[in-house]
Structure formats: structure tokens, C-alpha cells
Length: 246
Image 1 (cartoon, rainbow, N blue to C red):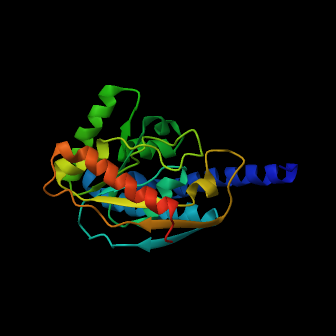
Image 2 (image 1 turned 180 degrees about the vertical axis):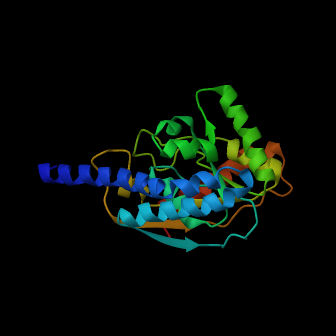
């Protein structure tokens, strides 16, 4: 890679973090008010979607979305997708208007400014702590009881090996969906790794294709079905990633 390319890609990464922080600084008074009470979360979610939109288009990303269904307003879902990039969070916010809460890594709460709002609005999990993983279920159940949706990246993190198209799925998302009898809403993100992977000197502007797959009902399912549901959802996402329809 030429020195010029390295410089440009470094500046591109720096620009991402500027875009991540600047809208938060500008909107911080309103954001702080919006997190004072849990019932105000839908308003915070609208601001989060605005933040995500600024980042995506500010980075030169162009979301292209093909839907097999449109989500029902007021319906709670369990949103799941493949996880390959920091931009997965922004793209998920952009794709759906149904207010949802992320289940995410506790270490992200350490990011200056972003972490302040992250730890107050998301369900944090330390994946190396069994107690923390169990506490996620109680927090998620509370949010679902409030009529919100939940988003979990079921791979449990971004695979270190970037050649892996889709890692194995953990069962947590499927257990919660069955317990609350809410549909699984799977999506496939095709280009996030190409556009902005965790490899520092990589990525660039362009399309971000999203396939919103048909949701899968959990009605009549029991916890003994969580593994079957896991495989069904992973297979649907994997087939779309291997044979893009968008």
C-alpha cells in the first residue's frame, strides 16, 4: 500500500470518530434529558437514528435495503444480524424505526462521551463473566415488558478471522424470544466488513446492502426449541450472505 493511501485511510478513520462524537456533543443537552426516564427512551431512539444517519452518509456509505417484510409499529421483535464492523450499530439503527435496545459489550462503555450514553441506554454484558451474562436476561426481560424490542448480535462478537463469513450463534437471543413469544427479525449485512472492518487501514465509501429477511414466529415454541430456532435463523442469514439477493 502506498504512503498516500495509508494517509488517506488514516484520515478516513479519524473522520469516523469525529462523526461519531460531534453529533453527540451538539445534541448532548437533549440526549441527557431523553435518558432521564425510561419511558422517554423512544425519543432517545429517534435521536440515535439521526446520529446513525449522520455517520453513515458522512462516511460516504449508501444503505441499499431490500425487505421481505415491513415491521409492525408497536410490535416487539428480536433483531439479529451478522456482526463484522463498528458500523453494524449505525446500520441497524438506520434500518428500523421500531425502538429497540442493544445488548452489547461492556467495554464499549469506556469510550469517552459515547460510553456515557451507551451504558445508560444499552444492556451491557461482560462475555467473560457468567454472572454478567445471566443478568442480561433480567434486563432484557424488563425492556421487553416495556414494549421495546431487543437487538443482539448472536455471534457474540466480531470474529478475529475476517475470512469467516458467519460464525456460530449463541442461544441467548433465541431463548429470550421464545420466553417472550416475540418474533425473530433476521437481517443480512453484506458490505459492512468491506466498507469499515476492524482492520485499521481498510475500507472506503460505497453501498451497504441490507436484506431484511422474513421474521420467524416463536409462537408455540418452548425452550427446548431454542437450538433448532438458532440453526434456522443462522441458515437463513448465511444463505443470503452466500447468495446475495440485493
